[in-house]
Image 1 (spheres, helix red, strand yellow):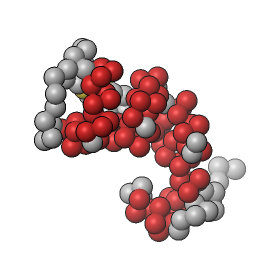
Image 2 (cartoon, rainbow, N blue to C red; image 1 turned 135 degrees about the horizontal axis):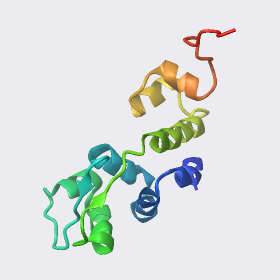
Image 3 (cartoon, rainbow, N blue to C red; image 1 turned 60 degrees about the horizontal axis):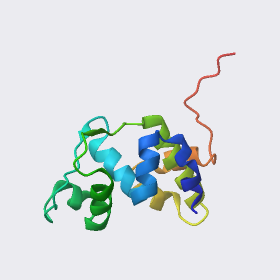
Length: 130
């Protein structure tokens, strides 16, 4: 089990269920694409050019279809704080094996942010209050 998978308990229940079914990475793709809106999973077969198949692949789309196909639309939460916490845990777990530059590209953030997340530097933008 990856360390980040242990943090899926930070996610809303529906995202935990999806992560268990199709994996955390594909669940995060769903959140990126459909977070904050409703998702309908069809009961009938999906063509190769169906948006869901293109986003998460045939195998994962079929798993979702078996579990949720034809049911009323499901709300996919944005879960911004939860998603950020899981992402940060993944970054911290990967940091000993990957450079800040590599992680910044992989997670589409800055090297400075990677170092902040990993506690390698302090946030010098904070002004002392006292």
